[in-house]
Image 1 (tube, rainbow, N blue to C red):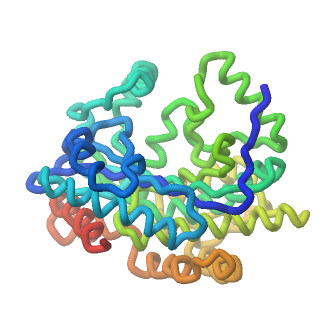
Image 2 (cartoon, rainbow, N blue to C red; image 1 turned 180 degrees about the vertical axis):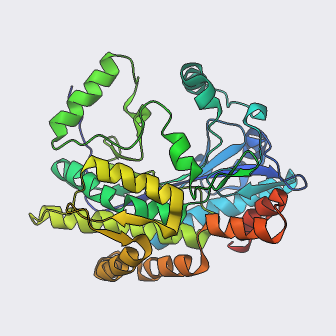
Length: 375
């Protein structure tokens, strides 16, 4: 089959931010998305940018097509403010993390729609377990021939993105010992997880044809890789990141993604070969960053050299500064270092749990207040 890639003339941005709905008193999840939509959408400048998701305890805020990080953050903030006002009327708060510390999956309700019903019908227990939230960042690419090399190059920085965003250490009332439990849960779904290694677009087309022919997917959007091409939009989509609790942290992650993709695309266009790790190193790096977060020692080249992820990240931020200046996101890229200094969300959540004797309601409250305080 032929898959047309609707290339972008410039490296545009699109961001999707999944947020959970929690009760203001109990801090448990509430299945109130439809009621929130009814209150929030009429007051939004762009009602179509508030989406439903698989479960009724979740809303997704998306941007339009943006040219830079400040525009994307302004777009999200405009929608977010209207959603927060709708939450106020329902005694709800927005919760931005990869997992909820104590909510029971069995009490959550499925959103209406045949697509969601079919997903659960197929995936059963694992599908019902998916109390997880993330952030997706799209970057426009101009040439289909460069999409897969850029994707392969971006996987080298998978652990950097995952460690920075990791926000899901506690699951079903227990500390899992992982910085990102979400990362390892989500890959249990069919077609999710790390992408296969394809060298040419024709190989990707044959793969997609096989998946459609055998009924693994009914649509290309059901390929749920952590990093994937989106041909209809002309983008490469980073789906690595856990849910995020502040606008500033989100801006940092969006800036890092934007700079990485543009840097890789520029180098590939110039005939350079970016560092592309073998799949076994990529898989190991995913596990290490999910387990250890910002303390992970990751594999950085094909010679199996290893570095502390924060050390490698510090050098990466310096190298990307000229790209950030060109893209208009120098402050946001610089704030990545602030995120490291302050501690990632998984670290902040654990600190609250330790300070309160394991009070998980207090953990949820801390994440909620971070988002409120960032508006």
